[in-house]
Structures are given as C-alpha cells and as structure tokens.
Length: 332
Image (cartoon, rainbow, N blue to C red; front, side):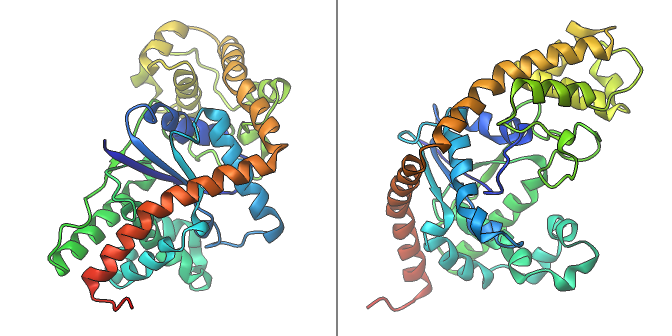
C-alpha cells in the first residue's frame, strides 16, 4: 500500500481553511493509503511560540484531527519533536541541499519579508526539515495546497541528490497530492488573501470551534459584491470573493463549483449566504462539539500522540539507520 505523509502546525485556532484544505481530505485518504500525520512542532518554532501555549495547541490540533474523522488506530498521529530522527535527518539534508535551492523558496521570502536578515536560520532551512519529515517515512504522496508544491519539489531534489551521491535507491521521489474544490480557502474579508489565523480580523475566518451564531455572523459579514451569482464559473475570474464563497460551498457540500453555479445562478448574495450558513453549520457544528469534548480529556490526547510516536519510531529508526550506514557513520 502506498504511504502518505503530511503535517500540520500546532498554531491553535484551527479554521475552515485547515479543514477544507487538509483535514477533510486526510479523512478520505485513510481508506486507501498507509497514512502518517504529524503535528509539526519543530517547524512551529521557526517563529516565536509562547511556551505556555505550544503544548495546549498541540493537543488542540490533535483533537481537531480526530474530531474531523481521522481514526488514531488506523493512522499514525504524533508530534514531530517526539521523534529525534526528524532533526537528525534534517541535518544530513542540510549537507545535501544547495544554497541556491533554498534561495528560490518563495515562502521564506514571504514570511521573512523585508527583514530577512533578522529571520531565524530555522526559518531559512525549514524546507530541509520538511524533506526529512517526508523521506524519513519513504512517503509516496504528500497532500498539500498549491502553495506547498515547491517544497515537495525540493524534497524530490534532495532525495534524488542523496540517491545519486551515494549510489543508492533508498529514497522514493514523493509526489504532491492536491485534492478537492477548495484546496486554498481565502479570507472572508479579502478574496485575494489566504484564510489565516494571523489575520487580525476575527471575521476573516471561520474557526472549527465556532458555534452556529458565530458562523452565521461571519458569513453574513463576508465581503461579496453587488452582482448576481453567475451560472458559469468562468465569470468568477475577476470576482475573488464570490469565487471563494462559492468554492467553500462546493467543498462543504462535496460538489463542483459548476454544480453550485448552476444551483444559484441569478440569485442574490443574501440568499446564497443563508444557504452557505446552513451548510457550514451542518458540517462544522458536530466537529466543534467533538473537539470540545476531546479537549476536556488531555490524557486521552496525550495517549494518542504517545502511541503514534511509538509506531512512527519503528519506521523512522530503521530508515535513519539505513541513511547512517550508507553515509558511513560509525555505529558502535
């Protein structure tokens, strides 16, 4: 069976973008693949994290995965820092990857902004750690959004160079897996920006723990336009907010944007927003309630992560041993 690896940051406040862009798809994949899902707390500290919140955020994300439908018995779910092999293989890849490759990484430029000289070294080299995450489990596929495809290409470059340098076929070349209608969910306030926890406006996103009243209020206030909804998705090209809201409805209802355009052609946004609210509440309501229940039992969440780490360690230790033997490290 082909293997999937993917990770999610423990930043807390999981939102609709996380659910539609990743979690819902991960639930579907567990039926057909050997799945490993990681809460990437090592990646998280490439920017400052409040130590008093990091552990609770890790538990919250774990609760979100399970509440969304991931079965911790059928999948491996663990937090990255529990497996030291991730950091060890990342160092090996620091010595395999080339500076030119990292200089082309657009996400570093976006996150560092104009003050890249003040950015942490970890933020610069974290694509190498991401490659280690994937290749440590010899993953065949990585479910990602469009904005992460470049990192999978880097992981392939690293795997290929390692295999070539050491005349081995140890690492497979992972493929990105992009699924669904709303793989990149945009802000409810600005259809040109991705939905994000870092947006200062709480109304820019729907959190997975929002209740029906909050969901209704945020959708009602979502930026739209004065035109009627089109019957052809091509007419959404210069209407980013309309495109975003229709894409969200399509993803929540497991339909295509074509179908949604046909259903709501000629309707006012006010009518569509009522329907979108009902759909969002029906999907996210049970998930939020289950997340709250799970968060009230931190010992259970810790046991899920502990069990996942034990199972992932069986795989990662073997692969790291293979890497060290190939490199020529003395293991006495």
